[in-house]
Length: 216
Length: 216
DNA sequence: CGAGAGATTGATGGTACTCAAGGACGGTGG
DNA sequence: CCACCGTCCTTGAGTACCATCAATCTCTCG
Image 1 (cartoon, rainbow over the protein chains, first blue to last red):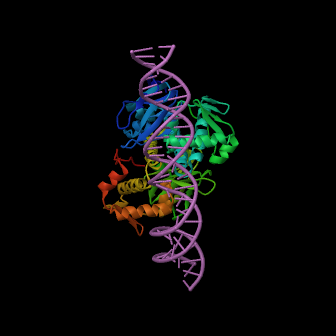
Image 2 (cartoon, rainbow over the protein chains, first blue to last red):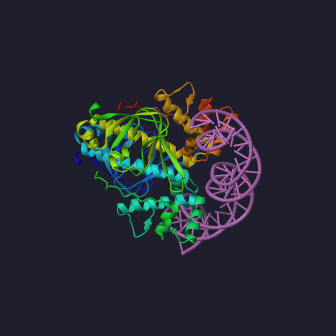
Image 3 (cartoon, helix red, strand yellow):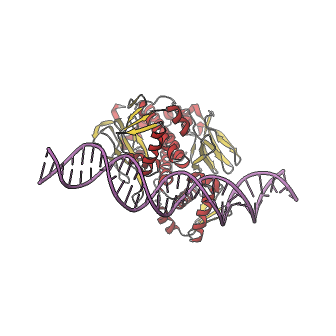
């Protein structure tokens, strides 16, 4: 595994890690920090596709398909493990366990996307908001970035709204309802899950603790 | 490759190929026909996540994650290539080219999901409708299932609406607008793309003809 | 012929968007 | 030190889009 590592890269908040339609020679895994994947339409609308946390692959599509159709941007300072894109094929040849682990991460990402698509397609704004909050809390907790029903958010409400497919104005109103009901609140860059059972019921959230993530 | 094939399976329209939360010992690739992946919430709402056409993998998440969180259902008669789930690991060990091809298919599926999520999250009903029609037409054409701006639809408008995240009632109204504008129509189980340039402009559609699909 | 599924259209209401204004905060420079 | 930004969040008013409920029509199938 280490023989494919070409070094580490640290980028600052707001930096673009990979850009849509451009062919970086590198792909990465996140070692530390938060990033987000997003994709825009010409007129300025954009969708946040998902967030990336430690252990996530960034640029698999680029490595395998030679084509990048979304952008990845750092939210916090992010420490990345750098791989040569053109050495990817040899991983499959020489290190089947690592290749399998990468497919694991890709399959998991697809599973998360399925859940988000269900959310955006079928749930109301309030349900979506709760679903994404729980989703991110659980993922953050799994890598030690959240504790005791409390999540420090490295992103703005605008990012969250773009992930939900609603406007940040409407997200603000939705958060007010949730706060008034004592279910959760988002204050000063921190999300507090105040009544997890009720929240899970409201969002029809299914905890997805499958197998442990393989090491990459 | 053939040594992993455990046989072929033909299922009838409407049959469930893989069921959410159940552990089939098999995974499949589609050899012929249409299927769709979908996922429901307890109260009956459901989202069609994507459609599967020849060459697509069905059940990768099951094979890699040992966990199936969506259902796959046949739309037409579907001919499937059957694989043993528990032999998947050995593919990585013994047949790196095949393993790489499977990751290719998985990465492509993720890319398609990204596009659909952008659509459902950001586009209006009429834009989404056009986007999905173009998307399916292009994919169908790539496997010889569509010709000359004409796509025979093996699915009902209800399926299409569930993929778009709108109701079938509203889809019907949206199709009426498109028909009145002479852009496309959906009549008697066939979608006619009558003005492709205008449709692409309306939906901000980006054709994605990347590398050719590897054989599986 | 009746039952059922799918599609279309109308009427009505709710959810979420747009436009707009204002407050809170942090960073910058006079 | 404080005025001046820019960014982010909040709230209000008015509107547009899409959902819901319901009726009708066609088509297929038993």
